[in-house]
Length: 176
Image 1 (spheres, rainbow, N blue to C red):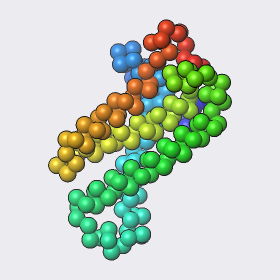
Image 2 (image 1 turned 30 degrees about the horizontal axis):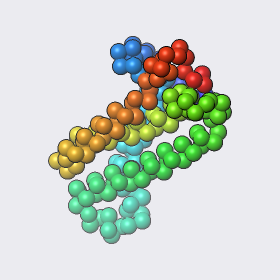
Image 3 (image 1 turned 90 degrees about the horizontal axis):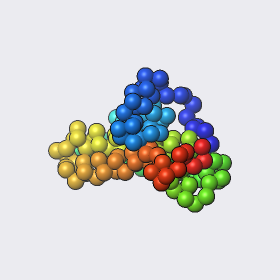
């Protein structure tokens, strides 16, 4: 399946990523870097505006009485809930409707690449990039443990942009 995101990557951003891809081995990131950044800003918007707006509507007295630290923790958990629901929905959608994925064997489903899978990965990776940013910006509240978790998760999700089929000795991505 082609990448379902409606906009192509900006040429300069894609070119920049393509120039560093050989050094980082993140070969498919240039096609999804804009989705990665879109996800980052989407989750940031939810934390700054979406969560406070909805929380004030649903829990007007409770949310208003929370301390700054507790409100931030609340808003971060709302973003986490939204991200979890979004990623699970997109994953199920990808499993059911990505025809390229259906044509793959078990090995290619693990190590291969499709545009829809890259999009799904960008939406998840953008969350962990946002999580790293929030953890650094509020290190005094969340601590080193959460920052280590965020960095580790970002690193793991970024590994999905590595061309594993080349690592396994095949010249092309499975399914492409």
